[in-house]
Image (cartoon, rainbow over all chains, first blue to last red; front, top):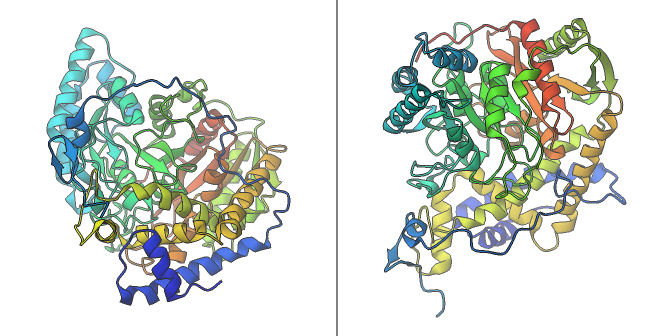
Length: 95
Length: 490
């Protein structure tokens, strides 16, 4: 499965990373190198094998649905690039 | 190097306990050593005032007779751990200036037990790398140099700062993390001991996430016993991490020096790879002989899917990373680079904030998770992961632990592999299987190569059986009698 420039452009868009046009070709080459090395996984017979998402064989623990902390906007906003009156300031989201 | 910085963690704790010196004294000596070590670039965040303040508080506790298990011991903390009010960057430009409002569980456990924080240690950006060269703050330089050479070598990665700081006596011990080998490979490259515990032993809460199903914190130190002491404080169940294991944390140090007689040691034949330097093969044979002399029974085992571990890892880890790193959007914390609209702001922020390797992995992860490729790549890799874990389960039928080399080479020159991602990825060929299966692993320094550079041997154990690794590790340590230290040039 070859990754072309159009695929890189699409994936970069999905990942929200601005890649300049001249980087797309070298990136396609790099990603192709890695993906074609990964293709060797097709040699492994995995028929009937359950996908393994975790090595911890336990069910997800549940907790009471209660407020444990909060009420401290200054700490929450402490690292924000822009704030105003106790809110995050972000670019306009809805036109 | 002065006397106090050269102590083992155990000896330092004993010296603090019998009041041979104070925490403030040993902390100040470390701070002086750190101040004179800028050529190594091991520390990226210096916190000398906080260190002295913590040391004084420790001395006060000890005077009152309520010292904890690590009280007064100055440690280095990998910059992947969030530390309250102290900059935590994960080696990334996107987190420059980020001061967490909370403390990671692992570091909180260390402070609960009385430890002192010297500063934050350099690392590959978001722990993605095997040479420390992906750090936004420049690579760490290995304190070791080859015989007669003056080329800068890599300390390995991603925990290169932790490894270099421990080797150069810039801390008594350090925290580190391991997603594909990031504790064990740097330990091997710097003649130090590194332990990746069973997945779930140490809480991941407050550790900047790379690949959540693989990430695990562990200790690095100059002796096996020191890593055992540190791990006991780091580990423990944490309700804030849903994958934290609720199991008793044993006194790991009590396993050090225990007889290993009768233990069955598996030697996986698939770990004899083409192009491995003959010295590493010889060291492996030597390790086998040492364990045999200590009374172990050596058995050959097969882990047939070993060669598929790295390709599976390079789907799973980037897939998880692409999802985890979506949070760096420039809105609530970290870097923001404004664009004409919201999407452009996201794209500019991430383009400028992330380095080349991180972007590469996010793109791979996004690709393998995207519509049409999810089953072919991601689900396939998860099935291969199961096969790899099954290989280990098979091996445990006939052995109690495995012995392998830690890395396929000694430390290499900075810059020598940075243009070739695949060559760099192959560094983790012997370590990555353990992360996929969730097992504990340890690297023990076992000898020097012809260039005078350290080499490590890896022990792999059953789930939650770190104890056996500490017994075997201390047996190897005793037999190897590894006392070499890097000659000070920095």
